[in-house]
Image (cartoon, rainbow, N blue to C red; front, side, top):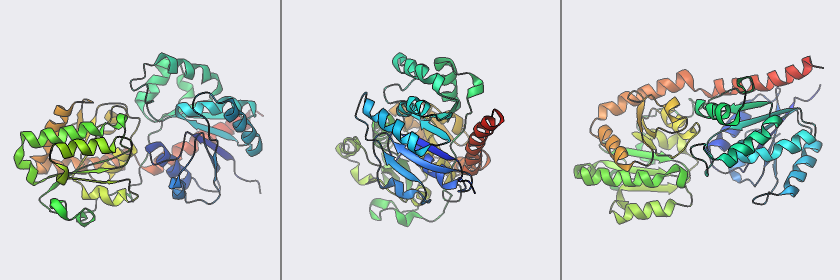
Length: 385
């Protein structure tokens, strides 16, 4: 019996992140008899690879140097010739480096996924990056943007025809991420984190400039300075690590609120921590389709999110949460106060958030759509023989 077709996935690296988490979820749920997988990292990978539940997935690091690295492309070419994948699925800007080697190696089916904005191009206006994508456009058979916002970018800025685009939302495991009443004991016992009267404001993500956790810190500080009584009940949980983590914590400490904040760093039990929260905040400057936002909504949490990227496609403003302008700490403080003074609204929006996930963003639907794209490409190739 012939082996299932091989898909070579190319991404920048494998650390904790939304893109990486989405890839792992996809591979774990595609039946072994349908497709095999290899993951190729332009940079390197971490023990995040241990989340793979399949033992037949090859994991390969190219160790590309910063900037132009012809040797890395030569390594990719040789690797593709050796692996002979049926499909290349590259992702984001760094994945473009794999397209020409894949073409030269004879890979007929080439997919590029657009998962979010680049750190140097938060609004998609960077002409140099637009040109780079347009130059690679002839090498891509199918684009998969994760949001309608990214789909518009491909059409309007890169000139991609609609016939070559399939927009697919991220999906979330609704069995793993679900409401779980009475789980406060997983939070620290000090300073009222486990008190039923407290309201836990939470966020999850890599602490870096694009995620703008500093704005959440500023909003939390402004909230407590305007409403001192909330110091008795408001608590902030910040899960994640990154280059700006110490700066954010230092700002909260300077304001005198360090005792009201729990920042344990990266965690592998986020699915147990989210249900312990009452309100989720995503203060990003740019987003594609945020996995953590989906996970929070699936956990039955109302969300405050910036109105950037794909966030407005997930959050129904005034029903499942609240959308606010990016980098506006006053608007964030006001949104926090609105929920903290209205506990019934927390429950109403949280219930609606869970219902929206169940209706529109299941992981089963996501996997079926990706398989559909892969199947369609291979069947079209067979018909053309």
